[in-house]
Image (cartoon, rainbow, N blue to C red; front, side, top):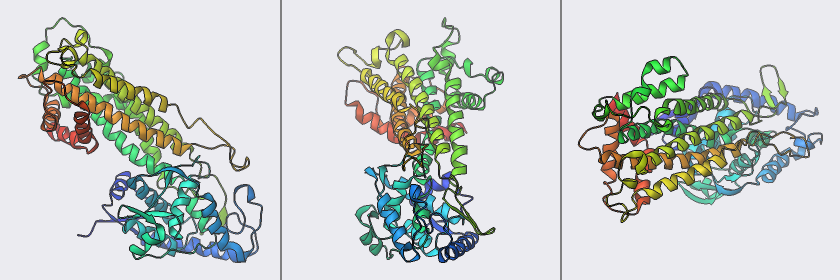
Length: 508
């Protein structure tokens, strides 16, 4: 069955479409207008390459070697040498979804028509994407200065038949991968090597998938928090709209509204209307304020990414309409670096308050429930170490939340004297998102156990939907068992989006 088409033009790519490409769900095609712009910019590059006037990246060296003039007969070797010398990445390869996104984003930048790429080279990159030839790209090696030079060089290696690629998920030499897909490598012409490696696409590839996961986790955090509120017989009053109307931060109001919908129809809240407790702990009462500020940070990052994935980040840029080729600094990753640092901090915020809610549930002096939610506690330890695991993850997330965007190590003999560390920020953020996902899964799991002790009285509709989904995969814990299997099962419900969708269906 044929896949849906996705037209790229360098201007209109959406983050949700990027997610589809990461899953190999669509066929990517170049829009006709984009093809015309690509051809026009290439015509200008060919004319400059045929002349004698020095033009950076076309007939000169690179970086600190920009003043070195290259003979016309050596221009092909110049481009090839650039790719080979810059392929210095180390570490594990990018996961296949991120590597696919890297390839897509580079194609989208080239489609803008400010790069000077040949249609033959861009066409090969698009064909690779559609035939599941995915470059092997080591994660480490970019400082985000002239963009992600090392990761993009590893991508470019495959286009010239060097390096390694995955074909249909199997790792092999790139020549073999291309041959199996019915494709042939290209010989790079003037400027094409530089065109392929200047840009922020590696940090954006990791960052875009991180962003979409962060948005999902923000919803899950609200669900987990609501489950805990019901499990601990917490008050719903802190979520009333009039409270948030007088402090109208958009994120705070959105979370309070979300909580009201998830908790709507609760029978549990009626059981403690006249209880003696005056106020809940902050980890329950201040969910809108804490989760809301995290949402604000995540929303900021989305705005940055939506601009960046459709931006021209080459150097030099080729302006065919004015016949100018201009060197600038659009490859600098500072906007993405800052945004990814913010996402990491926002997610750490969500996991930190989640861990405190888990403590509220497992501590009998705080919950009024059996110690560690275990029947026959003492003989059984219950969820004692689930809280410890959450604490460990939060501690590491806090370390990873130290910002990369304020760091800089000069490179290229001082020419690149301020760098962004954007890829570092994105990779840190990805790790924090995985820790946060596990922390929230632990809270959901523990909250389901707490809700078991409140039966047969029912929680709010959204909480009930989440609880029933969890219980369809993980039974109540009567006595101690290997909890990591339970955590893994709930984590899968979180990562797949099933938990969020179950609650959405119940409350909409």
